[in-house]
Structures are given as C-alpha cells and as structure tokens.
Length: 566
Ligand code: PEP
Ligand code: MG
Image 1: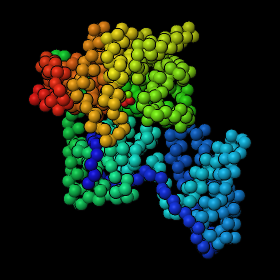
Image 2: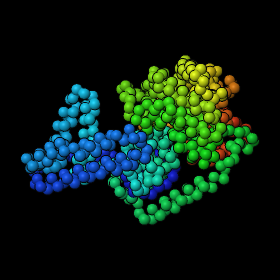
Image 3: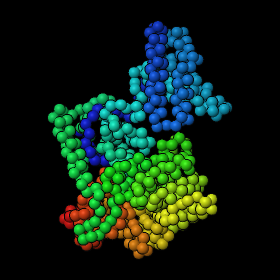
Image 4: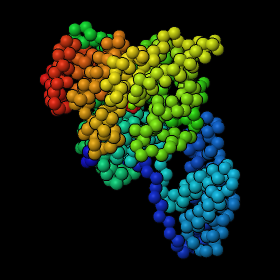
C-alpha cells in the first residue's frame, strides 16, 4: 500500500495503465537475416495499424487539418526507402532488426535535421516518432496513448499534464495516481472537474506498479493498494458503492438555495475547464460558474484558438447557465501550463515569471482576441470577466484599459455586447490582498485564488510534495489575507468570491461564511456537500468564530475551533 494525497474523492478498482514512455536498450547482435526480416515485416505491419487506430480515435475530436500529421506518419511507415535501407543492413551485416532500424533511423534523422529547409527539418520529428514506434514494436514494448484506452484502467504516471487529463475518456479512465503533485496541482483540479478519483504525490508508484496489475485507488484516504487480495477488492468495491449512494442522497439539495439558518444567503457555484463541464455544474445544483479556466481551450488547441472558436465556447457556457452568473478568467498560461505551439522563454522560477495577465499584457494581440470573443459572447448571459495574477493596481488598470478599448471597437462596429459585463480581479498574490481596499475601487468584484495565494504567501511551490504541509488554508495568516480582501471589497460595495480549492474545503467553509465571503466556487462535485454544511450553520455564530480564528496562532488551533463550532 502506498500513501499519497487524496486529490479527487472516490474509490476505484481496476487495472494499472502506466503512462510512461518505454525505455529501449538496443544492442548489436548477430542474427539470422531471414528471421529478422520476418520480425521487421510484422513490426512494420503493426506500426501501420497502430497509427491507423490512433488516427481513427483522434478523428472524433480533431479537425481534418490536425489529422494530417497521422497521414504523414502513415506515409513514412510505408516508405520503401526507409524499409529497404533497414532490410539491406540486416542482410549485409547479419544484425538484429532493432539495431538495423536504430542505425538507419539515426542516420536519416541526422540528414533531415541538417537540412536548410525548415519544412524538411521538421520532418525529422516525424521520422523519430515513426521509427520509435517501429523499434518498440520490434522489442515488444507498448507506447502508451490515453486516447486509445478501451478498457477500465487506473492511470499511473509521474504527473499528468493538463492536456493528458484533457484527453482522458471517463468511460475507461476510472482514476489516476501520480508520483508528483499536490491538492492544488492542475492534474488534481482536472480530476475533480472530471469527477474521477485521483491520488497524487504517491512516491514510488511508478516503480512499484506494473502494467495490468490489479489496483485499488482509495481517493478518500489517499491510498493506493497494488495487487489487492480478493477480500480487499470486495471491501473497497462496497465502500465505492456507499460513496456513490451518499452522493446520490445529497442530490435532494440540488434545487435549494444556499442560506444559513439565520437567513444569510451565499452563492455556491462551480469551477469548470471546458464548456462540457457546465452539465456537471447544473447536475450538482451550481448557482452559476465561478471560474472557467480558459487556458484548457488553448492547451487542447493546435494553434492559438481564433476569436470565433473562443466565442462559440464562451457563448455555450453562458447559454448553458441560463442567465446565472458566469465568471470567465482570461488566459492563465505559463507556470506549469505550457502550449504545444508556443515556446516560453526559459525562466528560473516559471511560477514567479511571465504567467497569466503578465503574459497577456506582453502579448496584447492574444489578449485582445480573447477579450473580443468574451465581449461578443457577453450578449448571451450574465458574464463576469476576471484577470488572473494581478499584483498591482496599475496592472489591473492596464488590463481593464485593453478591455475597454475592445468593447468600444465592437460597439463602433455595430456588434452586440452585453450591457452589464462585470470586470473583476483575482486575488492570488499577497500584494493584491494587502491592497484590496484600493483595488476594489476599480474592480467590480474579487475572486480569491487560494491555490496561488497560499503558495505565494507561504513561498511553497504548489507542485512540491515535500513542502505540501505548508498548504495551510486555515493558517491565521491566510485567513487574515482573506479577511482583508473581503473587507476591502465590501467597503467599496463590491462582492467577493473565492475560486481556489479552499472554497470547497468543508472545514474552511464555516470560517469563510463568517468572514463574509459572498460566493464559493468549487468543483461541481463538492457543491451539494457544501450546501448541506452551510444550510446548517448560523451566520452570526460563524462571524464570532471567524473573529476568534484570525487571532489564533496556528492552523491546528483554527481547525480545533472550527470543529468545536459546527
Ligand atoms: C488559484 O490560484 O486558486 C486559482 C483558482 O487558479 P489556478 O488554480 O488555476 O492557478
Ligand atoms: Mg491561480
């Protein structure tokens, strides 16, 4: 049994699927040409059928022009020149097929990489890709591909990138366990929005697990049990069913308002990563969307998404929420979020570098396209736009200035835009929290991003497992920053929400209610549990409790106080 951090609740029992590139150790061996040629023949046939299969699966989600790469790979796998060179080497040198393939591949890659023409140079990557698959087939190794999984599995990986999680098929991916990551790493957040169980930060899992091993993922207690006994399988299957039944029972609260016993109303809304997640927010009684992380749209794309594509996505979210508020965050890229089609400059500390609004203020062309798409979509519902990673009043003003310019241009072009678009500011850098009362003069609302606010306040990388103990949402220092932010907003007649993971934390909710938070945005699956909690609390009592909490010394003391107050 291996321990980790339960990042997305649930229990799953299935087989291990290791997402790890196979390591090939190819050496020269003397061999009988006839046998090697036969092996080569089979490996070529399998390579072609593998690529065809991937293309077929990909064709369900990719545009025709994006599928062209598979045609190029198929052509290469059928290229007589490549094949005859490998065959010649096998016959002439009496060597094994893997070795001959590697030699010929390396030679061709070197030639293509040194070509003048950029298009030809890029073909080197295709040769690498196809010949790697060919070598794997010769060595009997499987190249994992999430898109082609067609049986129930639990994915085991070092980490899952946001684009990996984006291509997970919930029908077969029953959960995942990763070596690195914490509760607020993006893979964990995606798992919650996909509603699949996940345990992250499981040191040693890649070495311990083998493809196809039976495994239990207990993402309630943060445990992974490899090769379980029959009794354990039965026990956990039962626990999993109980967990699902409890979830079902909460559905009775779906259409109820979120209101304390003494009549104080708040909004419980959902975090989403794509328009498809709107369904989950509605199904779980969400009163709106409190955070649409638009970067996933960019990460899934093959190039910067154009205005029309973005417009359709934003419009569909607004329409899906039927007039309820929808907070869409402008592009938050950089840090751990990379793009296939853009190379970020190397930085020593990417989380402290050109990320989010900092990137958008440098690349205003990209920012403007997104703002235009958002503004056009704003005609279809209640849109609130917010800028991530604002550190200073000047940054907010500059971003808002670009927004105003695009709005004026659209109006001059006669294009419809919503009349009451709210423009808000994320509070996820301590400097912004400290200056919240000034920022609130310019922003229509705040949304506190505690994932980053905590990492920057504690100077503890949210991706790092050894310092994950510093993720302390209930530390009085964090509570004070939150209080300053909420008070700053209210002093100026503005509302304040929270979209970091803390908003969905059951022990944090009573304090946040007491501090006066107006909107709690969380993964859709946490909404009903949070409603049950809030609807059973007295606002006046929680205010008194929160006043005491900010005066305490430690997170442990706050935890005790909360437990004693609910
Ligand atoms: C946050 O930092 O709390 C937040 C909501 O943004 P993200 O997790 O996407 O950085
Ligand atoms: Mg953030």
